Image 1 (cartoon, rainbow, N blue to C red):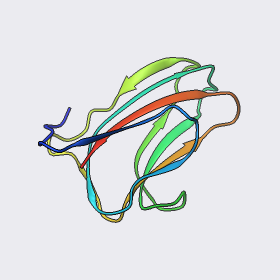
Image 2 (image 1 turned 180 degrees about the vertical axis):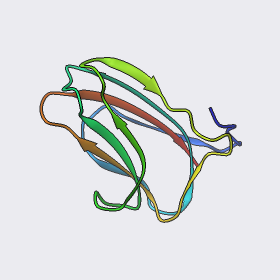
Image 3 (image 1 turned 90 degrees about the vertical axis):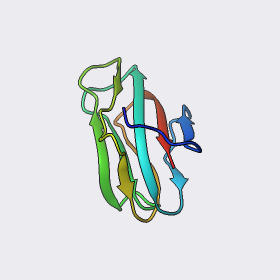
Length: 103
């Protein structure tokens, strides 16, 4: 897990909706995901921007119908240049809980 400087914010999404997390540049420090009732291959994608067609900077593909995952990001975090957008690509009843730490 990256070192988190003072002031890092946490975003939690349990609503199963895509969302703009931040509308300007910043650094992604951590991504933690848990899921249930899922379809193998459903995805959680973080994009550098504010929409679901912007550049992908993080992608997680569910390997099982349920589980949890903590991303191993570089120690200094991962930079995004224009914003941070959560894009959920699901085919059915997947229930994702996504926690993102960013600045």
